[in-house]
Image (cartoon, rainbow, N blue to C red; front, top):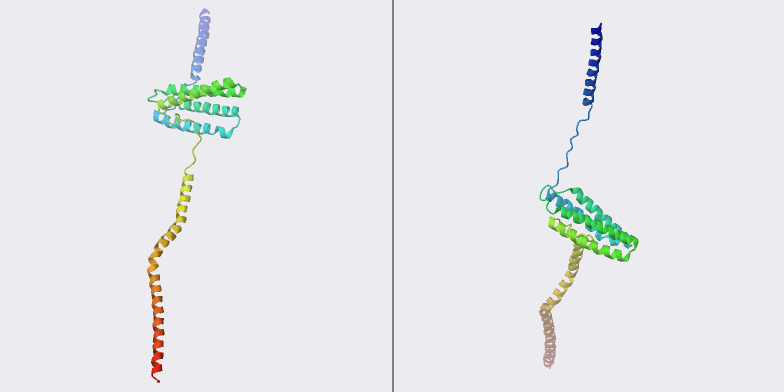
Length: 240
C-alpha cells in the first residue's frame, strides 16, 4: 500500500516538473527576435561639401533679402535667427563625412555658436535693450566671421561667403545688348547718308561738264547771231 502512495507522489512531482519545463520553453518561443538596424551610409567629404554649400547658398540669399521683407528691427532679427538656426540643423543632419573629417567638428561648433549669437540678437531686439542689442550684434558679427573661417578651412566655399541678395539673371544683360545692337542698326542709315554726302564732290565733274556745255551753247548762239548778221549783210550786197 505504501508503494502505490509513493509512486503517486512521485508522479505528481514529475508532472509539475514537466509543466515547468514546458512553460519555460513556451516563453522562450514567444520572445521577440532582435531587430537588425542599418545606419544610412555616411557621405563622402565631396558629397557633404556639395550639399552643405547648397544649403549655405540658399540661406545666404535669404538673409541678404531680410531687409526688404521686414522693416521692423525685431522682425529682421527674428528672421535671421530662424534662418541660421535652420541652416545649422540641416548641416548637422548631413552627418560627419566618411573620410577626411578633419575640421568638420570645428565647422559645426562654429555654426552652433553663430545660431546662438543670432538668438541673442533676436532676444535683445524684442526687449528693446539698446546696450545689450549692440553687444549681441557685435558678438554675432564675430561669430559669423568665425563660421566663415571654419567653413573655408573645411572646403565649403558658399558657407564661407557673406550673406547677400541674389544677383539678377543674365537676361537683363541680353536685352540691353539687343537694345544696343538695335541702336547700331538705327545709326547705320545716318552713316550711309554721311558717306553719300562725302561722295557728292565726286559727282561735281558732270556738273562742270553741263556748265561747260551751256557755255558752248551760248557761244554757239553768238556765232549763230554773227552768222545771221553776216548773212544779212551778204544778202544786202546781193540785191545791190
